[in-house]
Image (cartoon, rainbow, N blue to C red; front, side):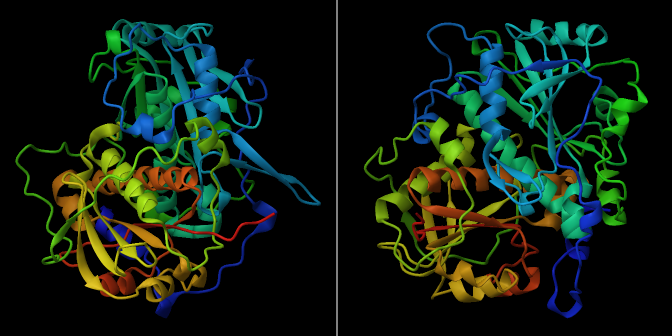
Length: 501
């Protein structure tokens, strides 16, 4: 199955939507269990990304620090804790529910992190699972890992982070559509990881082309239940070699107990659509240098206007505080976003798209980006396209589109009061032609990554934000006038929210 077929088969449609009762008796466990694995507690004190703000980090073009930087166990604790750690607990009569620094559709957290440690001060080389609930590392491999780990450290890598997805966690609620949410949530997580690594003055590089079978064997996961989504390599700038990762080669299989940890419910429902997309697990078709450019998302926008750069910095909270305090907000009120706040959001998003952060393949090949202005000081309501390279935007169609966009997002009426809807628009057919079935993965992960940048930017500016992946695709396509096969893959709402005590 390719991305276009999957997207079409799993689209929301008013005419064929049916009720879906959640099977609470078989709700998925949000944490994997390794009861017999060696556990290494991570230092919880001093978890920090430093004192610099989100804007300082994203716009900083100086990568190489004055002195060589090494990853330490404290630094790893900060990286994992700030990127995917628990930031809030809500107590219910039956249980306590934990929220994390990365958002997740339905708070189902389908992603997992595995740490391949090559050269980390205070941690032996090996392969570890990050246990969020314990804030600890569970050792998966030790001595049998050291071979290729040593080769990677010689090439300047300190560690590789393998991101996997457990589709059933999301499918429990979203059924066949769950693969979309796994990819978006992976992008949220990767956005956090890339930001914290940059704050730590380390180089990082993301690849989405994992060999599913080899990755599953290395990590000791059940490939039918858990699949590799991306790998993030990181190291010190003074010894960094691009594309340095050396694969594992021959490596022994892990025990049945390790593999069984991928099962998160006593009764799991499989969906052929997800299984077929996961079956495209071999590295995808590489991006050619001379492929045709993406077709335009609309025929011709209006006059381009400079996005500008406001009076900087207007948001000075340290990234640490921004990551820990980020929440999804839906209590928008119809007040204008200040002009400077909006321009700072645009500049932040543009910088992320054009290479300030490691995002893997070029975003422009996979996504068009725009926004629906509802209540923004100095910006007329309407649908705009964003040109991040030139830091400019152009009006496509004028008018108040908040209410019809809310209707196209499964009638979520609260959306109409958001000041702006940022839109991430892939073209599944084009992606299939140029990248193979993996192109859809690239686009949706990058949409989640950029959505996380908006989440954090809005938080730092004192705005509310919330991501929406539940969309009546045909209605959104018609409302926006999208052409040439483009679709609305992800929407990020931001705006003024009602303050709660």
